[in-house]
Image 1 (cartoon, one colour):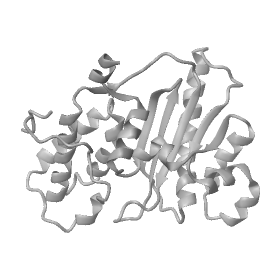
Image 2 (cartoon, rainbow, N blue to C red):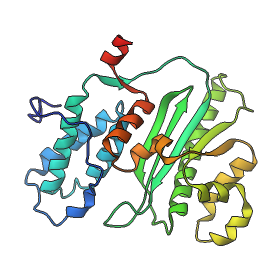
Image 3 (spheres, helix red, strand yellow):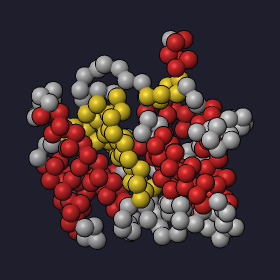
Image 4 (cartoon, helix red, strand yellow):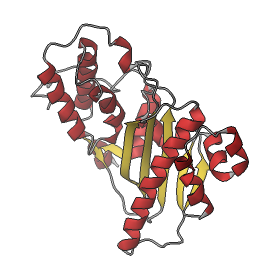
Length: 262
């Protein structure tokens, strides 16, 4: 990929995007002339996210401008390539452990500056190993951070239940085993656990209360986690360098040289 886009000799960089960057802010800039080249690069990056979940958010944001990319977006995409160049030997590392199903859910409230839609994200671990992840813009506008988080919880719950049912069919998971979903928003968890809060949040669609049904049925359990320990945060926004590196490691993305050294 680096050779294809003439970036094999580029200067390496530690993060795919600066933490203060808003991808949609410069849509009034000059358009990038070669749209086909931009689309080819984004297509290649999408393919790479199959094994590089830490790139999911950045590729997701850049892919939203494939119809009319600006020069600014091309520069951001090239920065992602510079980051890839610095992490060529990184890969997902899987280790044999128990089959505990733990998920992290997060959202970036009104993160898109153009349409004010939020981004949902989740990371799901089976026995400490990352098996599913998502970074996706929500289809409707959320009126509060609590609503945005609750929508993300709904998406996460659906994926967790699907994986749980698959494991049950494979006879490697017990039906009574409780799947844990960790989230850093107290309001969203209170809403799922306590019906008293419903009167204060009637604007949230009824469909999203399906999370509460699963909590009552003890199919899932919600736990609060600090934002710095919520791994899904990596898939909702650009982060500071030290936080990004920590989150990347928590996903299970490790340099092969580090494994050899260990």
